[in-house]
Image 1 (spheres, rainbow, N blue to C red):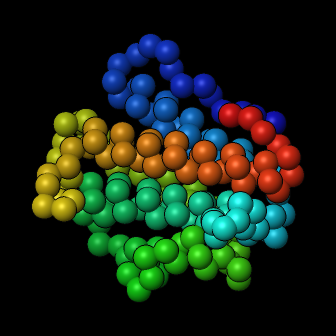
Image 2 (cartoon, helix red, strand yellow):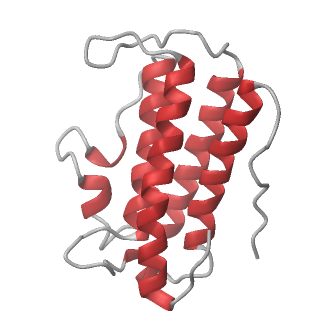
Length: 167
């Protein structure tokens, strides 16, 4: 069942951005819904080593890195030992718990929402990216595009796993 709320057609900038971000968060959740742990771990689009579980883990990392670490300067480590291996979130899924990864992702989404809700869109992140100041607005757009890109991957993975297609 698809319980996502479609993105707004009209509204202020914040409402539009949030509706698209929540749509994409919901899309990744929908792509993972109803699958077993083994199916979520499956690298179904060779030669890529990407899996739906890896995407969930990666997006938890993205939520944490951009909202908590970058925007709010919260002193939290990167998830999944990414300091040691840049692609650990994608690659180290064979022994990973899907339930745990989804819970971490959902927790990072909730924390990101709280950080974001307290700031105007033109607020500048407390940390720089590549020597540049980054606005809250830019972070929202970046995270939306990150989900959109990876949801395209999720579409292909899900179709190869069980034939299911859709937005």
